[in-house]
Length: 227
Image 1 (cartoon, rainbow, N blue to C red):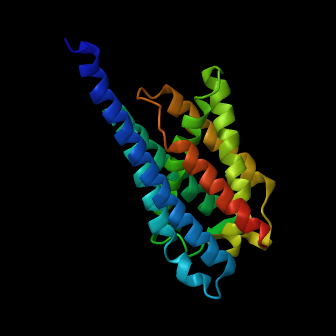
Image 2: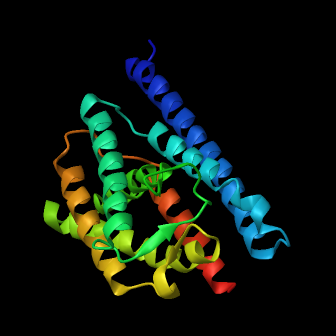
Image 3: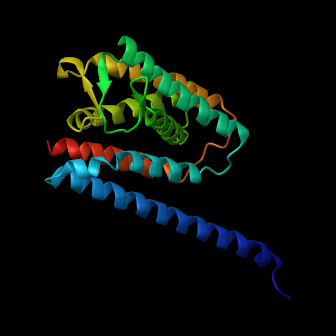
């Protein structure tokens, strides 16, 4: 008589194997894009050719990341929409007033703009909020502790990104000086979004999130070392 447990274990094992395969494919695709971008920006005589793919790279990263969200419920969609909108509007206020991050203006690298802010900036806030929020879930901390850690992870990535962003015309600071106000503003906005992340009722698990964060951190940190 066959073991009845095998009837249940086989589909679970098959599903797990398929998920791991999907994860490896996604990681491979992202690694290919980021390594190509790193080599192109860091060593090519024509970095402008590679800069035109920055919006595509961002959309690809976000698309693959959200594809590994286990359950895309109404609450999750609402979180994505609100975070994207808040991130974009905060940047609009920042550009117009200089009160949030300091005085800066966006260049052409991030693509189509509205009110002086690239439309993809809101998507970038979503990606960072979601990725760091997922990472903080690994820590045995209360909600506010996780929010603080996740916000610090966002600020840390921004610190690596800033010199690269200026070099490749993502944005430019007045007097070519990155103000400390930028990092304070980042932390404040990130903390608010992380509290919203924690209070949103959806499954907070994503196998690709740690890879995305580390890949971006290494990408920008590595480019910074080449300066």
